[in-house]
Image (tube, rainbow, N blue to C red; front, side, top):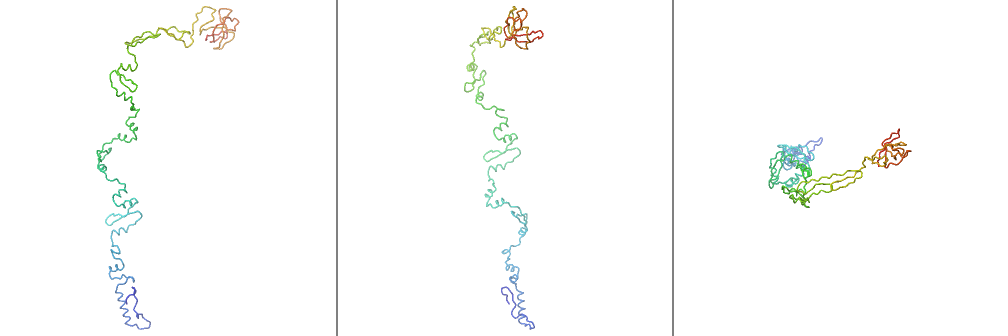
Length: 363
């Protein structure tokens, strides 16, 4: 009996009934039907493969190798054995052997570039250039620098430690300091007048003078005229109080005339061959009087005076001639006070037990 929709059903009349004799014809047909079904391919709907061969089974089940399923491959097996995580990429470590490595966002931005130009842009890479090719061909060593020898052509030269101390200077001022050329300390600052002097001819006898605009070199005679210096025809004349003199053709001597005596009354004055000076102070003079009635004495004169009362050091006292005798001077309060002595007198000490004072004329 054929299957219906892949489901087997027994033929009619083959079911056994209790207490009934089994009929051979239906029974044998049923057995033959089971034998035929068991020897044929079981359909997929009945849990079979619908085929009698492995190839037919794979086709019936939709498992055709190379069409429906992948054929076994050792590399795929190795990949399948990996444990993956985010941001990783598979790479080969040998024949049919693989491993995982990280794949950054930047790495993804590089591998999605369509060509080398785009990749260089992503990498911000320098395009090939003749200058870079020349530099890459150099063989460098310590303490060298690269310099151009022509268009896009480079070579190396020595760079000393001293040269580096100049190259790292931030400005001209610092570079001058490194070179010991600090303006105003090590070297003279430029000056137009100094430049003018430096340009003058070094000629024997020349004198450097200013002409109102710059410095020039002039001979002795011209320089004297420029400086307003006297020529040898000019005479040196001795003025009042001097002697000597003469023209400039030879050395001349000027001498001061003999001065006059200085007294309290002399003044600053000059004569034909003499001179006098005024005193800046009052000088003491020596009295030359011989009269016992003199009342006028020079400044600084000393008198011994009898007093009625004591007088303090540097105290003043009015002094008189004694009318009772010609031997003494007395103060104006004394009973024998006579003619007054002129001037101002100050005490320079006193013997109080004898009532006598030493008085000096101060004005």
